[in-house]
Amino acid sequence: MARLFGTDGIRGRANVELRPSLAQALGRAVAHRLLDGRALVVGQDTRRSGDMFVAALVAGATSMGADVHRLGVVPTPALAFVTADGFGAGVMVSASHNPADDNGLKVLDGTGLKLDDTVEDEIESLIWRTDEVVGPTNAHIGREVDGRALVDRYRAHRLGLARAVRSDLNVALDCANGSGGVVAPELLAATGAQITVHFNAPDGVNINAGCGATAPDVLAERVRSDGADIGFALDGDADRCVAIDERGMVVDGDQLIGLIALDRLARGG
Image (cartoon, rainbow, N blue to C red):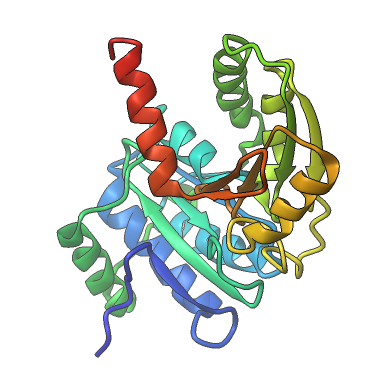
């Protein structure tokens, strides 16, 4: 039997390889193995199938007695930040840079980090044996909680960092019609830069469609035509970023890490 977990969670075509029944079983498994009495927090990107999978996750985890806080549409880094602030685990419903027809389930531990392979194997075993895992009766069933206000902590933290970096650059931002659009424009604007936002009109089916980090040439053309100083292209859940320089040349993630490392060294970090 093929392993469910890949390099970044469980992914597949929504309602084909990846069905709500699997999300429900994952919710039960995560509640049983990871929460230890704490709550679960769940976020999603802008795919139409996201609500369906979140509902299934909530049903699974609450059936095991866990409370589930729904953040709504958020970037994956926001989910990680919130998870590490007292939750037992987090699940992001997203297929990242994949097409809109796909979706995925990415599980984070209580520190906001990806699970190691051993824990993933344990979760997967519980998924296949979901009917053997007994949940509580009515009085001890978990509840769904509106957790959208929790994202304010992430926003405030990131705004504090952004305001410490003053900039007068002209910045082009491609949000990939994904979840980065809920915070990225505000954060970049807080630096004082002039921001032009592209592809921030999600409709459930246009995420990553001819835009974002997997199609950086689109933003590169906008940078050249608009005379921007720099561009940033996010992917669908904003855990990936590609930069465009003032000439319209793509600066990929490896190059960005190198630039950040050199900057830290120059600052004595």
